[in-house]
Length: 69
Image (tube, rainbow, N blue to C red):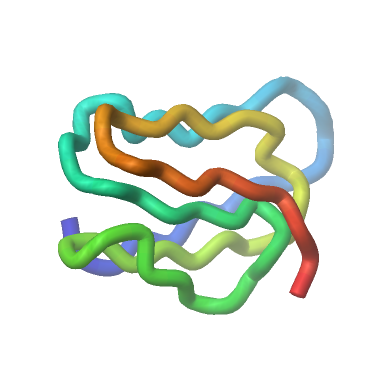
């Protein structure tokens, strides 16, 4: 955990962020490229918005969106 940066190009394929191993609530917005706090243990930076098509949450009260901000 910590701070992770995901670098993805728009050349095709279907990408998924999989957080199904977490038991605490996660919050991921696939539409932003600024640093976002996923949970207390993880910050995430996406290199481009809306190039990752899917996100899977865990067993917590998760919030998964794809809204540009």
